[in-house]
Image (cartoon, rainbow, N blue to C red; front, side, top):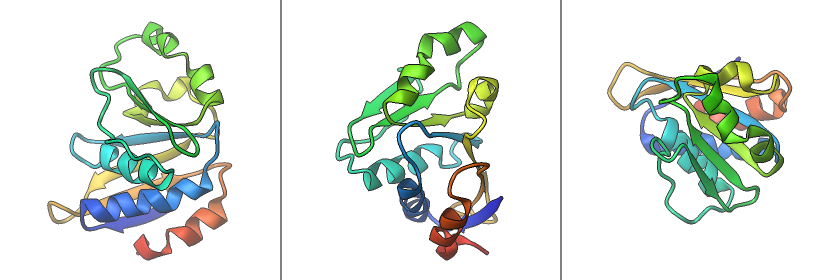
Length: 154
């Protein structure tokens, strides 16, 4: 596990941008954290690093937003999911074949995600803008990712 700290939303976005080069089409990033922790800010920084120029917003009500970048970004929010049937409606297999998929509240459907999902848990720090990001990677480029995140590690 890699533990990182940010002290404002811009730093959270910058950290996400540092993660982006260590992913590829087919990868899944599960974002976990309370409301307002910075899950969408993370996706914004990640998407910008992938060349997305359109505004990135939370897909809370639409469930999924697709952003054209390199690679394509599939941004999901499963906060409102109440049954396994809704997971089937997402057509995860097709999404995974066509981009990097970032899932807010992904722990709700972790049973449906690949074993090599990159899990990022964002929690509040000591001040209102501080965040602690715990990054768990089983098969991603752990060493390269750890080196890329040096500026945010304690």
